Length: 453
Image (cartoon, rainbow, N blue to C red; front, side, top):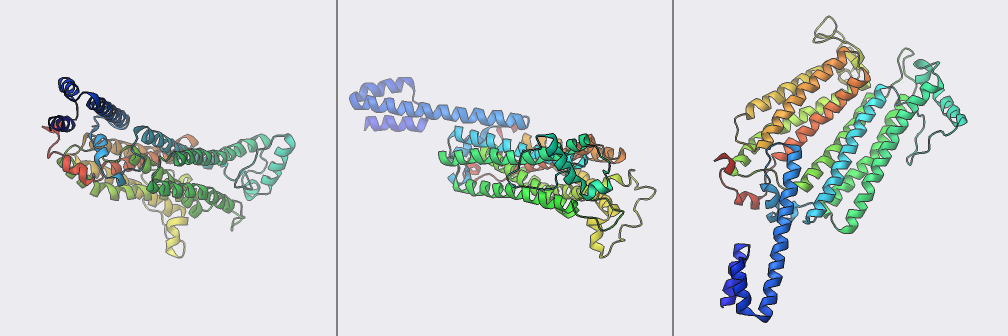
């Protein structure tokens, strides 16, 4: 009974004091000594793992926000196993998290590279497509063959007639790089995915989610070619410039945003199974932020998609004035197409007006989000995110106006597209940070955070 009492007190305390350990060894002798050594070793490893978990969480949060607590990460160990997307080993979550963040960053770069390809009018330089890809022209004869194919396209006939071979090589390499960068992403995603499955790091829930994202990524290549193919067709009007269908361009960009969002959200969920929160008061404040952040996020996404229709209709090169559109606030031809619904997707004037209105609404909505939550009792990370998002929204509007006034230079146009995805990223981070914590974690929280006392 005495030995059982000592062991029970040691377990409840979480750490074995040196003096009590020596006394237990002396009391039990033989097998008891071996048992104590084994228990000490297990507790030491547990404490070491907890310290590693806490340090990893702290460093990760500090990279994302300022003043971020590590309480939620350590408490995630006590949450339901269904909350974890990866096996609970610290090294497994770290490895899978790095891989997913890298994949999301790669998709981000793909979106930016796609914008540059479009702005340099390089997207229609390759007139055929293979799912597996192919080698670029490696000889002068091969380049001549590719150039002859391009000469048959409507873009060469109506826009680039007389283009030199050297100029063609530039736009060809831009489109080729965009395509191969996407295929490289597929390989970079598939190989680690197979490895982590083999090691047993990935749960069924995560495996199904990532399989869906991989399928979307494979489909993205098909959507891209479907988009390009529309630009290789002869325009209906002899005065119209060949360009890809704005509907297909919007589908291509929306698909990229969906893939990026899925990868980023999943990566965050892997390394942060629980949202940041140290008190019930902070959780209640986060719930109020969430009710506002979700509709604002939807508005940010709609504004980004409307930008795809601006690009698809080449509307950025019309009405290069601000705040008026030319000499008027609202152009007279905004409802000139029939049926009326077509104007919102195909009419250059209407598409640009829509984008201006949506961008302004987005800026004011994010400013309203900041104003409405400035006095709420929320986690410092949430407060910092809201402030950063408002600053990014102001920068994005500034980039958009500058791009318009300067007649869409490649540098500003690509920065504006990158800014849209950056703003969307911040909204994803904010929505992830204001999730409701699991019930086991919520039960252990104090009413007020210690830092707030």
